[in-house]
Length: 548
Image 1 (cartoon, rainbow, N blue to C red):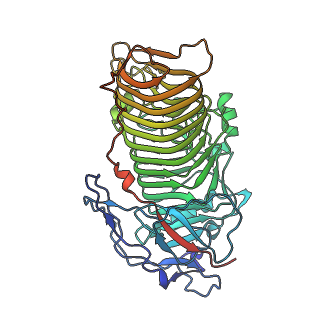
Image 2: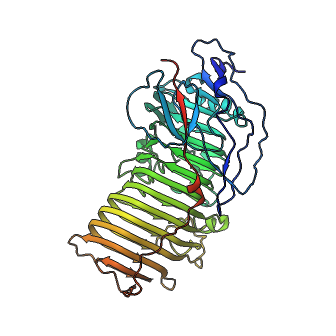
Image 3: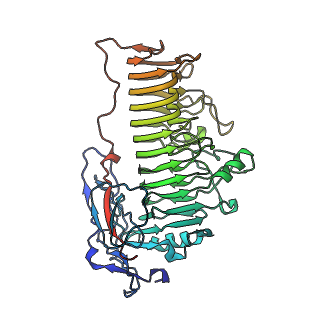
């Protein structure tokens, strides 16, 4: 065992922390079962140094996926530095701010993941990390992830980033793994661009989003993982994006900017209780992944920063985004699924997505955007209890000839909008293409769009709804909407190539939307069934700090 294991010993009172259990869900999607059958021991720091000097290991287990018709209740530890005996509890908890943690204080954190409470815990300092804001910790992060990956089938592992400023270049995560940030921890992205390797473009895009060719690596990447968690006590990941924004504006970059966090080809992902600041470009990009939960995440970027989208699920299924606060230079949330001919060929939709209790500030972009890259299809998106302040549009659907595929079954209700350009905006003329190889015969289908229970004040226009000539957007339903329009020379409603109905909407919509009669009046539909990802419970693991 390498030296970093010294000082950690098993706590015999915590050997039953993880249990393999499932919640049967009628009608829910099949999900992979917990991989390890034996409940592993928990590991704590022995401050006296009198332990075995090794990380305790549980018996070997078989890494298999049991495709039973059950959904695992996903649980995983999230804990503070130098932690002790643990237990799992089913109470959601969210802490913000504050100072250090006194010895002996028990702290509970939200958790999720098939691995349960992590059996092995280590600090970044055990791998040579230095939190002075100057020393590079790239090697320390790489060594920590590599060293802890050996416990994937032995209860999983957690890497604690203690209080401090931890400068680093890009690094990768591993399966059955939790990255935990102390409330006073800041992971700082290096501004040395040479440390950001060039990687291949996404196959569903065919090129970088900014420029033709490859793209810079992301600060934190997860690739082909199962059960990965990024969480904390509202610790911070700072992309230090100003350098990137300046070079982007001055056209000094030869490749597309990387993202703060990108999770690819992965399953059972939880990102919670952290703050993301000043990403070079998009902040959080789950792509080609399933069973993704983003909870209680704060995202902050200057409102004039280029392409700093908040959360962009991209060709993902079963996604839950809740209780997030986003200030962005672009869309707060943008749901995507590939770009023109590359997305059509890759053919992976985004679907079964729930967004709830989102607060957004984005003066030049959308609160929730659908597209414009949607060539794998987007369907069954649900959003409710949305608050927006000083944002361009509440919901924006963007597509174009050449995209192909479809946008269908989009349901939004209970929006409160303050100071907006548009309440609703959709267009079939969003004409950006990756190259000249797109198919002009690939005409997207947009249908089944439902908006209800919306109150908006200080709005320039109620809606701008522009379909595609010869391929109108159909099945639009708007009900119980009130928009307070400021004086403007612009039309209140601007509609072309759209079809639908409305009821109880003020001001009165355009003629393309037909008023329902008194007998027909009913709220626009919102699904009553529960998505599989909503059956996943955010559990608790309690840890106690045992040394000063």
